Image 1 (cartoon, rainbow, N blue to C red):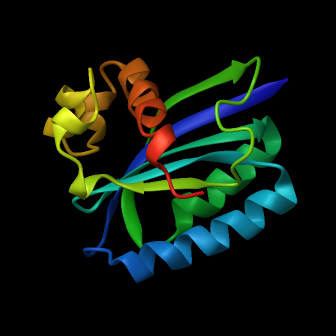
Image 2: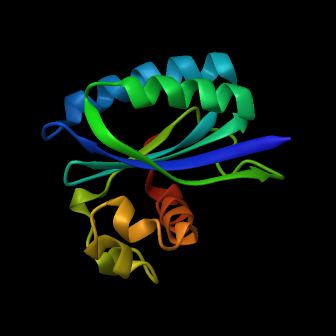
Length: 141
């Protein structure tokens, strides 16, 4: 059975496009090896990510992510078993949300009014999943 985990975290310092490109390259290599797929969003120093795949492998990757010194306040928003992958063809999609206006994402403008702070999304993790899905079409793969 497939499993997914959604988490948010805070960068220790502002991240550049090059910083995020390095993170993506590392994640894509590891995820390809472990058959993990997902999506990473970045906004104003905050990350939101979903990982999907075998539960043990997802949890192993998440353990490494939690120890990464480039961010802190790594908070799980949602874990659950799933029937199918939302991002089946992506070892890791990515969107820098800083450049998006809420009106660019119909029906999801309220998400862009908030940083990816667990205090906001923990109340309703379905919103976090919906936000990741909303950016699926605009992600770099």
